[in-house]
Length: 95
Image (cartoon, rainbow, N blue to C red; front, side, top):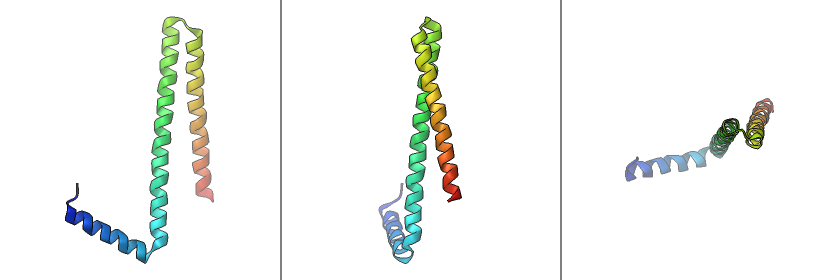
């Protein structure tokens, strides 16, 4: 944690930077939003994979074909979403 004085100094530095180079600060803000979105997407994919694995395991253990099916569907959707996410981030670098 920063002290109040350090927070004040940091805010002053940020303000001066924003005044001096607004394009740079806009790029930094956009990058932080993209990083948060990537972390959130990764967390959803991991949760979807975990749900799929759990449903699959419970279906196999309990002999329930419905649980096995929905586990595979959940896991398959997570894999497909990951592939789409990889393609879209690879395409951003080309532009």
